[in-house]
Image (cartoon, rainbow, N blue to C red; front, side, top):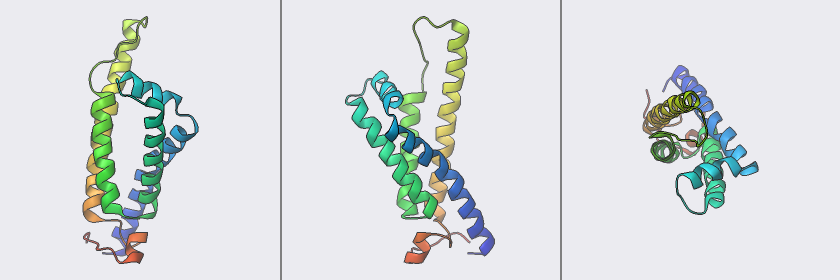
Length: 148
């Protein structure tokens, strides 16, 4: 793999890790909003699941950042993105008492979030396929790199 490709993969990993590190830390320090979404989706143990999601996001985000177990983490995040997109961002949002104009805006935003999740899933599948590149823990450990 060329130095240029390894540098590009490093930049991509940094960009792909930021959202999950930030989001995971936020869920761990203040899980209430996420617990509300989980509860609203009809799932049990909302607070516990919010903490688990936060821990998952923080750990996998850090793993992507440093390039550790990148192929496994890439697939795990791709599945996470699809799962959370379908569970939390598909369908319409109805908030009792909100004006129709506000609900239209919220539903449009929800659709964008669904597309964002699917797009990120594609990026994580790509990362799982090509690996972390030369500037990674995986490379130092001797993990196989496919990208050329």
